[in-house]
Each structure stands twice: as structure tokens, then as C-alpha cells.
Image (tube, rainbow, N blue to C red; front, side):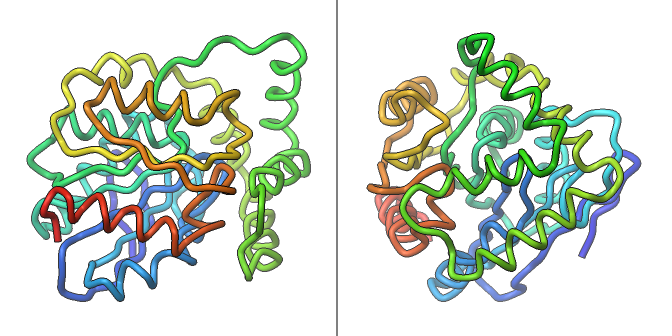
Length: 264
């Protein structure tokens, strides 16, 4: 399925079943298939699950004028209004953590709750020169991105990891895909960070205890949660993709959070 928006096409899957809507956004450099392991668990629990490819990624168009988290937020708002299924639970990961903040501040009427998995939701401290060089290289060379991506699973990889890796590498080889990744690396998230105090939607920050993208994952999770009035759940053993690495534990944490807020 696809949605035409701002001059391009956004691809998404829709389980189509009855039940509250749960919209899942992946992070940069990956596709909606990153939710393949946890998606059946959400469907079994009675949710209508929609997974969306970001601008420049997966089956969405590759070339856009804007790849910022708030631009993805506009796509998210447009898709939620297009689906017209009532307030949704928004599940994000990594880069789209900032998107979750923006959507919750911009269109709170569209949301029951937000789940920010491993969120880059604020302007991070500048890395040292060595790390800056590494980031520059990873964003420009697909093989380096694939090595970096694989390193973010810290305890176990999905059962279909080989297929997932081959499909992702093929997708990123398409014209414009790595340019989208580079644009996201260079994006300014300060616009979204500035709206943290506006968030009133129930929020869960879900973080892998071994997430290598943060010097102290638990501290980062608490910092973001405190700024948006949310709560924290740590997934033991998980890296940057808890929903892919530990789908059962991730689903259980999400269900517990939603039950606490009487969302079902």
C-alpha cells in the first residue's frame, strides 16, 4: 500500500484487522521489515498493525527535498488521518524518536500513546574526531553501513537475519537510498527537541540495556523520559533494536505500559 504525500509516495503495510491502531516507524537506514518479528505478537493481541517505510527507504520513494524527523512526522500525521481509525499507538525506533515527539506535540488528538524505542530525540553531544570520521564513512559506503547495522544486535539476531540483511543491502544499493541515510545523519533534531515540553501523550521509552549507540543507555532513556513525562523500560541484553532482537519481551513491555494507561 502507499500514500501520496508532499510530492512523493510513502509505502506501508496494514494488517487490516479490527482493533486499535498501532503504527510502527523504523529508524534510519532500515525498512519496515525490522518489525517483522514483533508484528504478529501485536496482531495476536488484537491490534491493527501498520508498518511504514520512511522517506528514502524501503518501498517509499528515494528522493525527497526533506528527510528531517519533522518531515517524517508530517508523513505520519498524513497517514494517520488517511487511515482514519481513531487515536493510535505510535511505536518508533532510533531516528524516529524525534518524530514521535513532534507528532505528539503537533497532533495529540491522533494518538493514544507513544513508544520511543532507542530514541535519538535530542541534539546529542558532538562526537570526537575519530567518531565523526566513522559516522561520515558509514553514511557514504553501503558495506560499512551494513557492518554497523549488524553490530547493533548485541545478544542474538532475528531468525531471518540472513534474508533481512540481503534485502536491506539490495534496497540500499538503489539510487538515492544512501543519500537519504546521509541526509538523516546531517539532520537537525533541535526542532523536535524544542517541543518535548509540549508532549502530554502517555509515553514509554524502551531501551536495550546493551545499546551501543549510547554511552549509558539507561541514563539516556531516563533523560528523554523525564523531558516528555514518560516512563522507562529497559530490555536486558538488547542492543539498538529490542523489537527485532527480543520481540516477546518488547511486546510484553508495550502491553504492560498500555494496560497501565487503560489503552487497548
